[in-house]
Length: 297
Image (cartoon, rainbow, N blue to C red):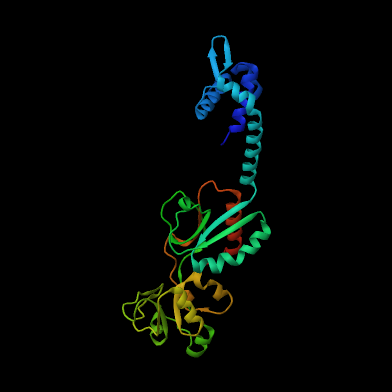
């Protein structure tokens, strides 16, 4: 589709002048560049448009058909290319966004109303899905990915590190006090994510590790661990993006924050999108970056 309008304009210039040199002067091209452009246009169309001879150029039958009926096509192609160019520059159209259920509910869906107030010509299709999504194959404009990203050609905007936070409700800490060292956790109710009470993964801190071998509560998902902590069930060691909103509202309190292990290199909360994005994608990336910058510290 690209350059169809300008190729038609060049065709009409060559047809009117009867040669590449005169046509090239009209459109600012050299004779050789004009000839190459016409040959490439003919190859795309699959038809010869000009007869070449020592006396000059003449229209073939296909060239005469295009000359007689192509005027409207040229005008429509120019108008369509103008609209496509506008779509590239101005945020408009349907924006398809993919995020996990937990992240999308907390940090994407609540901001969609404000985004559409700022960009009313963009409609949003937010897909909440916990499996890996191939952006190109599934026509997704933007996705949220958490953790370490594999090497790819996708563009990336990192919103913050992905690490773990030890937290509890204010009610629990009032009743049981706050631990100061990993060894203090042995005297606390711990909420772990797993399939049973044995063999739990270690909680990692900069001051050491703790294995909650006798947890008070075992749940099957990190979201459930957060919910149990909110209800005063004990201490949970959870991803920071799951608790950032609760910590900001004071519903949970970070514990042993000075001993929190740093995020592993490359692990973060990322926005990813294909190269050469339209304006709608760029607008949404900048919008979410503004809204969520500093949330996942």
